[in-house]
Length: 331
Image (spheres, rainbow, N blue to C red):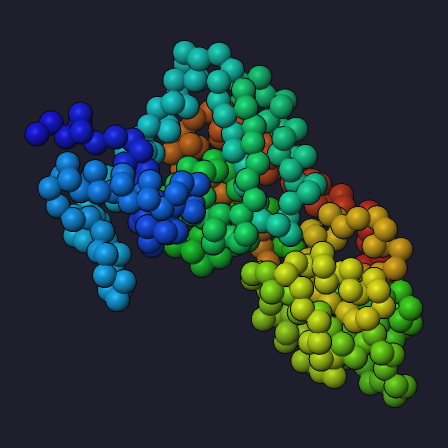
């Protein structure tokens, strides 16, 4: 059988997504397809090859069969070569045809979207720009692996460190800020951050804190900070997102932590009721990542470098501009 005529790009995309996500159901979600569609594409590929590629037994720890591992590897190689080939074609023969898809995580959306769009718009070789929102840095890695995004701003994770297929560059170290109602005496807040002894009774707003359920790499650091600085603050409130947590703080009901990058994305009205203090703790390292094969295409490589510089400059300017708000704390 002539496999080159039987196997389609869609089938290879499905095989790659299953390998990346670990299941047919998750692959369908990543690809934005229905599960029956993904199952049908997989069944057609297995039929063409005459072998089973994915274990259907949910009790097994291995998702792919031996043949499945082979074809997952083949799919990665073919899809990478095709993507690089399209990029090189645009460079050599196309006219303004490169497409950029930028992804980030919820706490770092907002300002960064405008920066990423502006860098794309400034390059006449880029014909289309789109944005994707991943619920976590782990999901963003999957987006890059299945070509749902061509570049992403994310947290440095162990998964990224272990990935050899991506080029990444550290942009900045995000800081943990303590959000406190403005009704709280600033001197008291600073004494708590500096672990000074507190003799006066704590106001009600300092006796409760907001726990955030959304995945974030620095949750353990946040819990440790509260345990050592304000152990009496019970995690009474919970919120799916950090923005929701800040809304509760603005209502003078408790305190919470947030990253400095998220601070730059908050609505102005929240700044009227909430004071933000630099805890001196690094929340996470933020990195820009792109598949290595795309770095071989000048348009993508140039975009990566320009965006990295723009994000660094923006973060530095923002931090300096708000230094008076954060730096009155001895760190």
